[in-house]
Structures are given as structure tokens and as C-alpha cells.
Image (cartoon, rainbow, N blue to C red; front, side, top):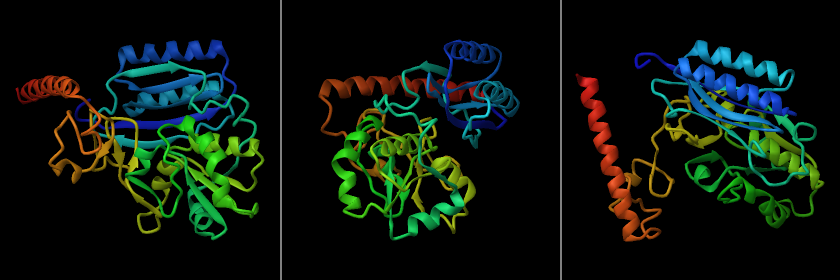
Length: 310
């Protein structure tokens, strides 16, 4: 498929997923993978499914039909992008307790969540002086791009978000319970679950960006967009620009932080070994291990380049 374009679909749905259907879907997807160039990551739980799949267009369409038969009338929240290269090594399917881990079992987004706001009405909402805007993503995602004047909870992972709400949200709202709370994330799943949490806690006027940043970038022109920077994604592309094409960031394979082209010029940057974010986080033995790993990666790259030339 090296000369073709891969179709990439990110999707999620909150619905009551029966165990028999979970097993059936998993088996069907691995069966498709055996005979086709399918890769991605899909997380399945009793509350629904969440993931990103990458394959040629016909395969993706067949898989979507398969999933829609299980999801039924529930919204699948599909976002589409394209890539000339595979964005995952292989297909991984994980069965977990939650499709996005928050750790608050008493909430149910499929039955009670905030109000969807589409891309075209989002700008008006977040420009409203009576609105506070909360980025529900992790700190390293926020660091490379976000909406103007949005609040960064500075979390390491989504399971820290409930504690941030308890400790900090009231400070931004003050005594005014008429304020709008607008939340967003990459594809819509985390902000939807966050709205369910806030409703459970008794907050009012709660909204979330339908389809997340990815859908917003698909819908809005660059001139109209209020999103600044690039959007972090959890695959080989690292980040997407406003055209939903691979952006300018790469990943530090030592600490996992996204690093810009400018960061790579930093004197402390050593590919695969360290960056300025983690220069003091690892021991010399760690760095020796990272260095050996990078040598193996470079050898594999050279080998693949030679095969491609031949």
C-alpha cells in the first residue's frame, strides 16, 4: 500500500456493550487484519468503544458497517483524516473497565451528559464573556496547541480531572452559577465524560465541543479558527495541523513529551536519548539503555531504506 493513501477514522460511542458483542467484534477485527493492512488501537468496555483505525478506504468502510451494526442508533462520533504512511504498527484491541479512564463509576455519559455544541456555534460560545473554557486534555497535549484563553488543568492523565474539578473549578466560577462551562478535548470523548461528571456534581450550563478539536479543524477555515497551534494525537503522526495533516512535532522516546523542530535544536537534545524536558529525569544507566535502543532503531531504518532503494 506504499503508493496509496490510508484512511484514518477516530471514533467513540457510549452505549451498553454486551460481553458477547465485545468478543464477536474483537474476533471479527482480528480476522480482517489477517488478510488486510489494518492497524490501530481500539478500546472496548461495557460502557462503549473508543479508538482509531487505519486502513485503505474499502476496509475502513466494511469495519464501520460492522461497528454500526453493534452500536445501533447510538452516535459513533466519527472523525476522518488521511495519511500516506501507516500511523500504527499493528492492530491492538484492549478490553478495559472504561473506554477512557476517569475512575468515577457512578456516572453514565450515555444517559446524562452536557449539551453538544457543533463547530460553527463553538466560536460564539467561547467568545461569550459569561463562558469559561476548560481543556480536558493532558498537559503535554495542551502544550502544543489549544483554544485561546482556555483553562489548562495541567493534569498528567484524565483520571486526575475529577480532583482538579473539586479543587479548582469553583475558583473560576466564583459565586456566579449562571456562567457557561464549555469543555473540549481531541475527539470529544473526554469532554463528554467530563460533562457527565459535572452534571453529577450539580453544575449547570455545561457544554462540550461535538467531535472535539479534530472535527472543529475539519469544519472551520483557518481564518475562522480560534484554535492555536497543533493538535496532539496518540499515533505516529504526533500532531496534526489545521489541514489535519501531520504537523511539525515529534516525540522524545525517553520521556514521551512532544518536541518541536525548535526543541530539537536545543543543545540538550539527543535523539531517542533525552530532550530538555527530561535531561535531569534519568540516570546514566537509563541513557545508556536509550542510546543502545536508538542505535538499533537507526540500523533498522538504514536496512529499510536500503531495501526500498533496491
